Length: 145
Image (cartoon, rainbow, N blue to C red):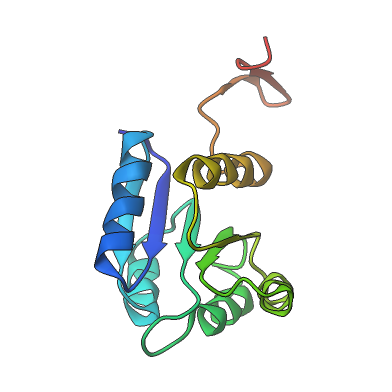
């Protein structure tokens, strides 16, 4: 099992279960939350490397949750991929301006979603298993060499 934890915040059980199974199949450790409030509670216990977040949640919306996170210095650097049925350009812009790192519309391809997860983790340093630290200033990227 990977040390890379991903928090999936999705109120629809079948979608959340599909995401969890897909991510676990790739070796990620998955945390699940069915609401923004559940996700806030989870973040009180641990810090994931990435959050997959639905926009339309009961109670606090994914957009409100993002804004809440980005105001907290301890949480603001956790990358977020918004996963939503809201596919209009205006919704994408609002989500990105609120602080999400990527935006995927439903229905989605699990292959594309996994590629986006890996890309965001690479950019943010959340996935470092392909790097070997030689000393404080030098790293070897094993996928490149």
